[in-house]
Image (cartoon, rainbow, N blue to C red; front, side, top):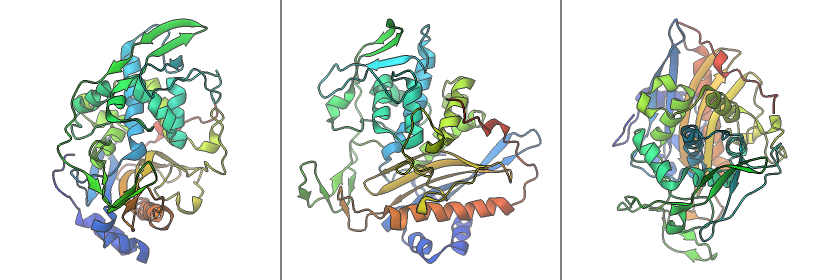
Length: 401
């Protein structure tokens, strides 16, 4: 999918409006205020279980900026596994101890991880944390492993020239984010591979100014009566995120150049942690009063901390920051043999001030995802299918740690 201007399918708009509550209708009637975008991906199988995909769009606009927040963790995780596979160093895999050193200003080191069985950090443990609870430090470490230049070039080569990942989730300036750390892969005290510090010399196109809101609080807790400048921030259009997720969930559905270079074990590993719930994880072990099961499951789950039926799995990644909420998900209902993808973003910041922590996530944002997801799910339960999908590939074992 490539969109240079806003795209809307009347059918999807009508489907939502026919079933919408007054609250959802208010959002649908104010696309400029809420800046929402939605992609519903209908999946049909043939007699050989091969899927085809039909995308229905609602106010999708690749040129309209939204802050992707933690959504950038998803492609970073995929790129980390791809790079690890391509390194092809004996003994180095996603479970190998990965020790991060500090080699430039404001960088920090990580040599241990008490949440892991081994007691050491690894690519695998970072990916678990990213998908289970959207851990920021885990993302930072994978960003450092892949490297800013490599990370962006990999995405551009796969057909996402409008996407860019320019920063960690820690206070650093643009120059500091271009530098990434020395990293060592160790086994039983023996060095298997050392990756030197890297620097990205490539320029980014920051000619288009991106200004959001009417005011913002800066890092010194001062109210600045001017929009917040996102010009140099991470940027990933919704349609890119949808295709990146689809390329891993259904690699045969995209062109070979768009696929990540992953092994079958990588795919199964990703499917597990994209769908596992915090309560099912032992390493890491989470406080489920804080990290409840729908903590990172927005579409028809999170509002009200809705319980997730045992026969439904959401393979997804979410992001939330600065009033923007995003979710890209693949829903599987094993009981009713239903599958579909939903990708959405909404902006909920009625006072126009950023960094004041007064966003309408609970009042408007999460209910938007819950209700749109429910409407699409109910439609999917009743729509005719010539062939029922065989969803065996996505039935996973969540017991082994």
